[in-house]
Amino acid sequence: MNEFDLIEKYFNWKNEDLSLLGVGDDCALISIDSQYQIATSVDTLIEGVHFPKNTSASDIAHKALAVNLSDLAAMGATPQYFTLALTLPEFDKNWLNDFSSSLKALADLHHVALVGGDTTKGMLSITINVTGIVDKGEALLRSSAQAGDTIFVSNALGDAGLAWQQIQQNIRPSESLLKSFNTPDPQIKLGHALLGVANACIDISDGLEQDLGHILKQSNLGARINLANIPLSDEVQAYIQESQDWCLVLAGGDDYQLCFTVAQNKIKQVEQLSQDLNVKLTPIGTITKEMGLERLGGFEKKCMSYRHF
Image (cartoon, rainbow, N blue to C red; front, top):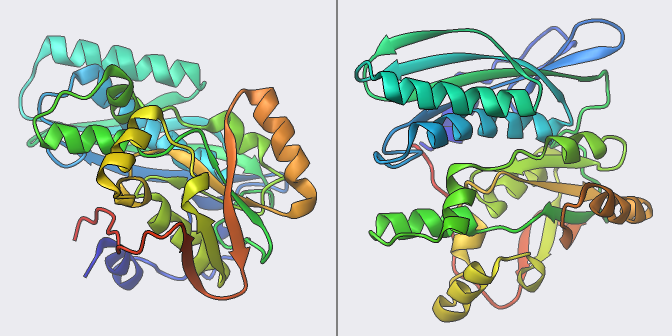
């Protein structure tokens, strides 16, 4: 059983309260008054699973908060506050100073406040629960894609996946690849700007195909993507040219970019957003009525994204 089946079987409780949108999207949504909904999400990072043992405390802190903020970005939510549960193997003043400083720097950048949490002793792991707000009924969902929508992704994909692959091979990645892997940039401004523009959205954490697949499943639709259109850095492009293996891009994960769908009559707005925010937004395919995900580009190998179970 994989982690998504596990969640569906054991924790996807159906809420009778219609003001709640729970398991199934990047964040839960809770209506708090006639104007706003609360968006909340939680993620855990574990040493040796989500980051190597030699990762600096500052990079661990940044990534732990960034991956949660990325979930808010995928819903178009504005960050408000977060809680932290920190499990440490031992007390290390220098480590904690570096961790705390980095965590605060990213929190200050996105105006999100730490309001509580827990600490305990054990194997190094960090759990953050982040909360934001979004205008009621305006949140970007996975279930709202429409046939004929154009599929976009932000920036470039595959850098973090290539960094992780090289780390596992005892190869020192370039500083650019390490930055993508260790300190992802949550697309908060883009997510907010997509409200009223995009039909559906998700952050790419587990790989493009798997995460786009969540949109397709929730929307009961299919998609056609063109591999040649996927935005790549020079290093990832060189890797693919040498290996002829697209799985790094399609299933590598840890990108924390946004994948979203847009109706044809709003593509001009996306192009303007790209200029206004200075964020590369690339069309890579189309939402189709026919179920399933079709690749154009001649690569037929089945790619498997990382799964915990």
